[in-house]
Length: 90
Image (cartoon, rainbow, N blue to C red; front, side, top):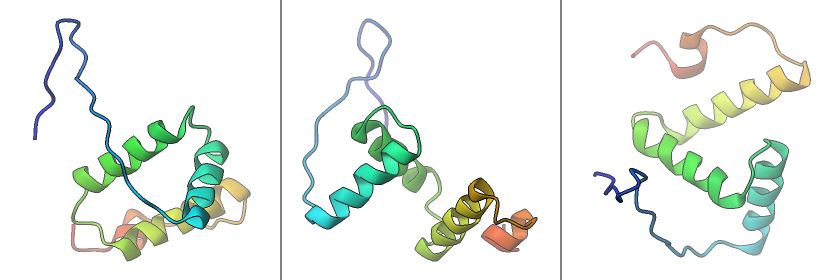
């Protein structure tokens, strides 16, 4: 996979359409705003980029990472090692 460059040096962007349930879209919107993203598109691009760059992380791993991050941000965290979060097999 590659990014085609325009003469300005910026990657060419293509629109895609996806269908999601309204309730899921509400969750997405609440999350991107809560996380400080400028737009829904920016948030979704980051989520897709993470999925492509880290295909070895399972859905369960992402849930654990999200839970630890949420706990850290809300002050309910304890200290975790990298192995606690993603496992020992990396």
